[in-house]
Image 1 (cartoon, rainbow, N blue to C red):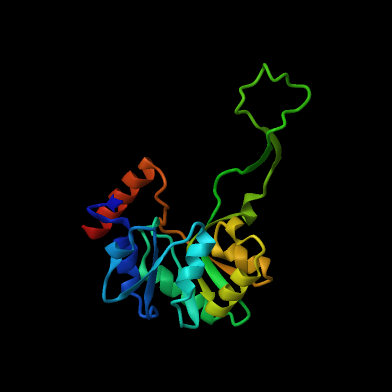
Image 2 (cartoon, rainbow, N blue to C red):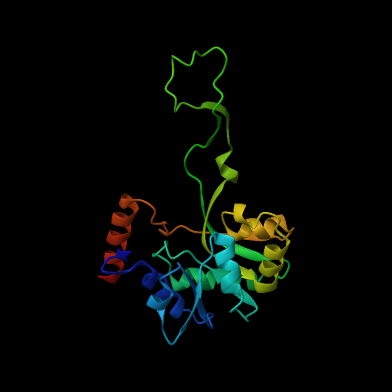
Length: 211
């Protein structure tokens, strides 16, 4: 997918290449696209059917103490963010990893599809949900990437997970295995391109960065 005149993944690759702490880069590419990413400074492996499979495939090519996992769909990655996460992990010997995350600013509701008995189903649309409670947003964080881990801790977490395909990020795997994962608060835009609007916003921000 092109963003601001370049393939989406290239923005993240450039940021990683600019990091002093990054020794090698491994890309888990979609089936049929492995050859498109050939490069002298890249290792390319086939992606799996799930996120966890893709990460496991990439980990086979990793020989460093730390490993950083990043979604190519977040093209606003900066070298400074990667280095900050590495520094956080260096400073916390007891932690298995550290992730980029943004504090939740919206009011968050926990909901149930089972509407209360006093409401007739004819009175509400089929898409309506019943609010169960309002969460304390001061304790909620939206996980992002990059996520940096001690490589062996992530390998062990992947091997120990009974249903790794249910993990929506690598921190979940490490948490399930009893590892401590820290949060590095992110205040700069680090959006994930998932909708046409996201794409437009990312292009504007990248254009400003390159101006």
